[in-house]
Length: 353
Image (cartoon, rainbow, N blue to C red; front, side, top):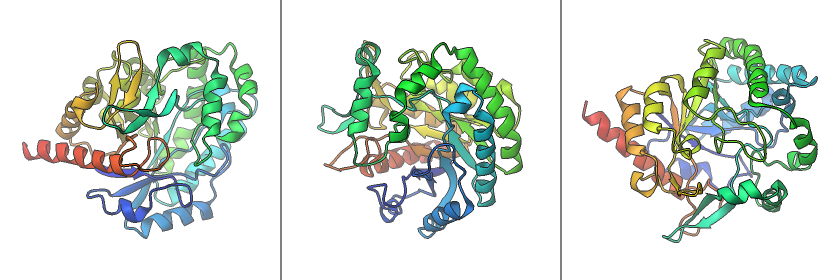
């Protein structure tokens, strides 16, 4: 198991790598060129500069999250081939500098959705919160206003250039079905997977967050059947999954332990986090401790230990604790606690062998 920590780059993250270095067991930094517009080629000099900086702290930079997929590719319109060629070149460039995994998603318009960024928990910490009725009944403009008003740091998936085109994008997706989106994903993968395989890179698709339709938009990476369908598109070793317990786990029909048992071997990258589900469909993110949420984190880690999971793993969203001022979900303190909890479970299970 290769423990990593997601970082948003110099001048774009409240967490310095000097502090991450003090968390025991962290081997690598999960990174991206977050200021790069979606669809543009990541140039070699930009990639080298970031990787060189990360390596000065003793970390590897083998996982990129994310090289975002341009909406034209998801829509399957006349511009998609141009953006796919750019994506291929970015893959080649990343491969030359030792990148092994690219996490990506295929969610229309919104990469992730919450109704509150700092919802209070009973212990006084705050966390990302999803109010199902609010998302289902409100006009998306209210959520867009909330995300656009948060100007302290970038929020991937809610870039200003995308928010400025929301009406246009909703119009473009009008009438698109899940099957249409699957066809466009298959087209994309059949183009990029040979390049990824030649470059020594595994493509790891992130599940939809949340894993159901919002605002009438299709969602396709939602659970067991969708994983099977994804893997049937291509048997390339570069065709893989980002196993995210938090995204999948908010649907109580997804048994995360069973899914780990079946699909972790096809997952070069794992996000492990906990969420508390409520009967009305709301959910809030919690500590990684199993008893604090609704996901059997202990059981998931046991499955990973039993199969000697050798992929990359990171704690996912954390709470905001000890008055830390940080990007929503991405502070230092609770993710540091999460790492130690996950490593503690791993060490305990490994000692039983």
